[in-house]
Length: 283
Image 1 (cartoon, rainbow, N blue to C red):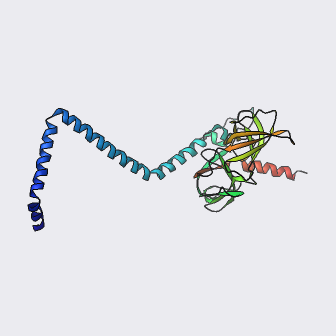
Image 2: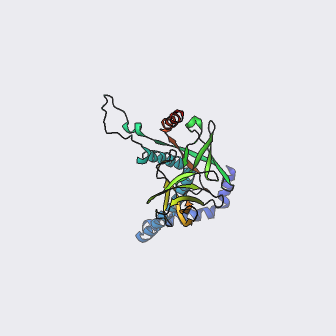
């Protein structure tokens, strides 16, 4: 307490000056409309900048939560796409005396499961990704993997909580694809050179192909939902041997910055496999 009084005694003049100055400025701005307006504008500007900085800091620390929310929302939207449902051909309608909660679910073909990318390679001839989602979360071998911007690869190995994905940037990767504007059934592979580009081969010359055309997954693929973007045509070259086009395609997915993906489950895969097996058993 004694130190406090000594401090006040030592700096009494300065403290008294500051108090008087504050009182004078308060009276000056309160009873002078022009200066009060100027001070109000300045204080609002200053407090606005402080609030903006605080909001930026707060937003930074909530980015993880926002990303998780957006991934869940994207999964819900992808699961509502029309091409993810497959209706059997029939000219007869059956009436049941029970009501399903969601009648469309019986015709769903593809289901999207969000997953986080925990490792990724782009610089070798055989590139793989690892996802933090495994058999305990519904992932099995041969499932397709797509990203926010386009096709990523195929699941080749699964553990309890992890899955290994053969990237589209793999020398053994093959994806059935078409030109979005006019079919052109072909095959997408990677030549092991530039991670930004893949090759679309076996495109008939009867199909017009131009730079900028969009390449998407085919409806004849049992693994990938139809219409997912693979990339965009960068260059068109003729194959003199097969009389077809070879297209250089810039990938829609940026494999250098890929952080999140969706594993695609074909809900009709077991039925398709069973039919294939019965065909092989037929003498």
